[in-house]
Length: 508
Image (cartoon, rainbow, N blue to C red; front, side):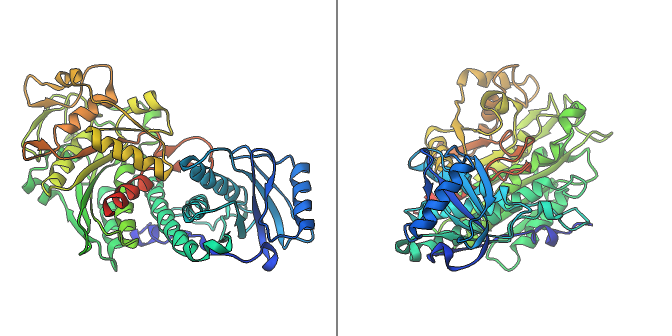
């Protein structure tokens, strides 16, 4: 049986930075970047003869600067490595260049899976930000899911054990903290991926709450878990209503990182449906296959709070994990039932498969009572998000300022996100004849209507709603296709890096 502690002890690549010349120490693999014009980027301290042979090797291997194009070849005799990896750097400046470095490093590391245990990664870097991007790419790509496998990882699947990021001498001092930040980011994303990948019979609401409690031990993160008794006493009708069809009771987990010097407070609310069958409004079997991933938002929030504490960000960060399992049974919520929410609102449930907004509504209202400077929820909320934006780009809604802040943070993090409106003409579609609201709107604009529903549960302070943004990650949270860049199959860990950027922005 998988334990919470096992989830927290998954494989982690050893990451360091060094200014040593490439030939100073032996390694299994040497990773070099290829520019758009086909030129191999080799540090200036490498001897001219070696540089020439590497360029000839790249040409013969048909290496190119196309992003995610990777070629692996045996190393020349005068290079102290078993393999040389040529990885395309793409084109772009600023943020695009940072993401290209992540993708180039990640693509190279994935290509080395089962072929190398150590690597020197020498990509062109001029700033600490670029060093961090390369290290993140390595750390994010060196991932393997083993939590529920009884056999050891086969050689062909074995990830990189250690990597040295090669940096110029002028970055020697700045590189160490940059790599350390990358290590914490990669660790947070890895935990999110592992939680999402877990089978739903293991990752119940109680189990995820236990992971949160276990992970916080020995840190300065405080954890509070509300089980069914406390949820009933607090009037959390959304969480209880969604979970009442399951034998696995709902949970609301609150995690708090609150350093003494913090001047700002960011509150993060994550949807945590540990399995979504649709309830009595049952999904088709094919649509149910990936629904263990419906807790990706809560997993990302958990990992973000832990990472904020590990990085000692000088900002208070509170995470709310809204955990429930949506199953059909004789006790399940019926279409037509009216739920009494934590906010005092009543909601008519027309479709039990529109359940994520119900648990988030309770979480948003609870989080808002603390009057944070920014309230953000993140959720695998609607299929309409994928119809509108595809499977790699999140949709962001909310008030104008908060929405812009989140989209900007996502851009800095390298996680694609796009601003979406909350059209007022769609709001009347949520009016109910028998309750304050219904949980479904009309046929069209499903992502936007879901955002409008959530807005109703953002509390007001001084006659105005709190600054709030909603991130719909239905598509980018789970990769059903082949791995790409630094992204594996199944759980991607999307959202963690964006939320860490949001927190960091409030620490300034």
